[in-house]
Image 1 (cartoon, rainbow, N blue to C red):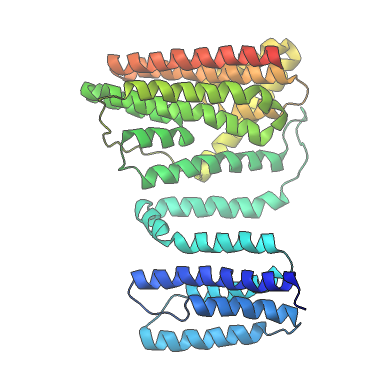
Image 2: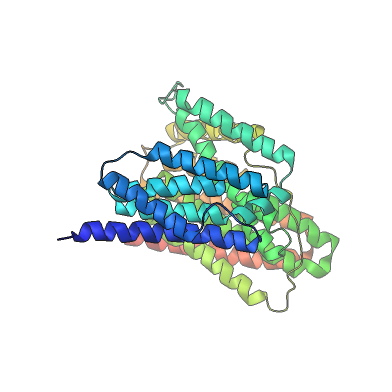
Length: 406
């Protein structure tokens, strides 16, 4: 009698192979070209992989050779240069083997394969938006990270017992990665209008977005409402960004942060929605600095080190007031470094750490309000001031409520 598990594995291998093959087949139809294999071949290759492990027969090398011969004949006949289909076939064969070991992992990997196969057009679009210098800067950053990170000491090396070189650079990589996502998206969708530009700008730098859009409102006061909405979107995303950093670096602190910062972000979005009636979604490109630029990353690492030492000294000599003072000073320029430093601080209560982060965020909002006042039009400042008043009130009141409940 045939076992249910064996039947399910056979069916799963055929389905996974068919789906991957269907993707390749549709891709070839859209491009009006022929390829080495279609959905049926992929399904059979996946089944071959499963049967090879079931029968304990190692035919991997034979499969690779057969695919290689097919590639050679196909390339010779149709000037076929790429090897995506051939690599996909080999992976499909391995997926058939993996089914016998872990079905869930097999499905997960299969989904990732289909996803990667489907993003070719998006990658081409990204390549068109990013120049060679930016690519080089990103590659250098990643190479340095992959080379240096494994050999950095994973222990504190300073007299204050604060700086762990491994953790420090890991913080830089994580923060830069969040900014880089927004940076790439802003490059791709820079022609979609000022609202999306502002929204994505909040992932990269809400301060830079505020300065640039405020200047735009000064140059053309008729666009003041539109620039203010873009600035507000960037700052609402900043609140979400702070929440994300706390979630990454101190899960215990999240119970105090999740409500206030998500509510502040949501209230900002709601206000902007109410004032967006009649506003035009004009085009606005913002030229951010590549977050993976090695010099920018080093600057952030030094800033984080300075803030960490300042927090330590401030707390040792002035107690909680010292933390609040450092939070105010650090918040004028940036909230990422102070948020991470406070999240990592072990000898303070969660309520003090949370309130210090609130202070840094409020200081940052005030600083950007000042930028808007001096650099932008009066109407741009008016809309942003109302946005600030609403979000600050929600942030403070919800934090006080959370502290009372918790």
